[in-house]
Image (cartoon, rainbow, N blue to C red):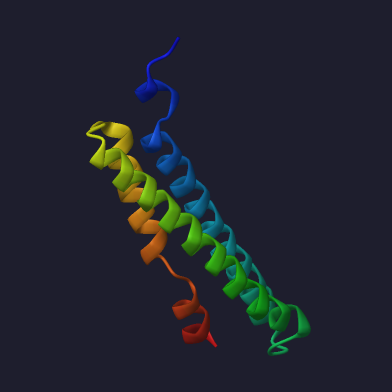
Length: 111
């Protein structure tokens, strides 16, 4: 039988949520940059592809924000249970980076 502290690892769950949130942030930034570069090369202005992207990016950002907050919550649970370690620190730092790294500001600033 495993002890209760080993069967439920909130620091690891926090790290997973934080990494998924960072991945979603990176994907949204990458999609917008690729489409914006393609539109800038063609010189045709905003197309329907970019319009669709402007609707998809905020939705993906909302999901990424919720994932980052879940990672932050699991980090807080791990800190409360005194499960200190590198995993907890990484989960906390990545959760904060994912929560702060909102791409909506850059989207509207680039247009």
